[in-house]
Length: 193
Image 1 (cartoon, rainbow, N blue to C red):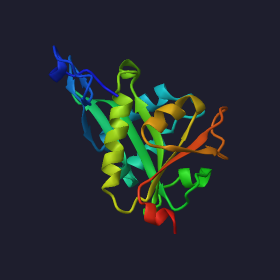
Image 2: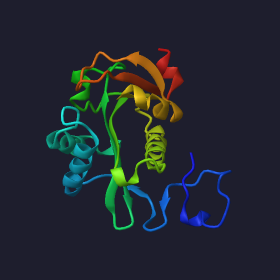
Image 3: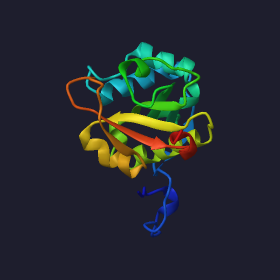
Image 4: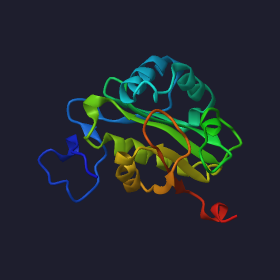
């Protein structure tokens, strides 16, 4: 996917990938979260999911404190967070309510809980950009053998485009909609054991 950036003004950039860039604010920057970011992150989460699906402030706080390497925020210009991806580790390959409720530092399966982009920045390539950056960073963590997530049917194409395969309908009930488990294997040798 392509995003028009400041370096593309007046040029044909359709033949190459350009990182997300907002001409008014600059290129997106990435960093880990701090507890000072909790309110901003919670506001984005609450605005992005129905109330019966959004993570609680306490769950987000737990993820920031215990699973920091698996939490990435995207900031534009003034460092206001406009996107984030977060996850926790689990030992199981298949997601369950239990595996999604905690962080097991010894796990090798990364469960992505949220991929969030502020509404004003949606449908502009930022979701693809932050997910690509997140996966690239996770590839550098040898402990993580696979990434899994739950997605609603209308998002399966988005995650498929990012390299995830649909494993099938999930047994996890979270809100009123059906969820599908998607996965990406990072270490093929481990997967065949």
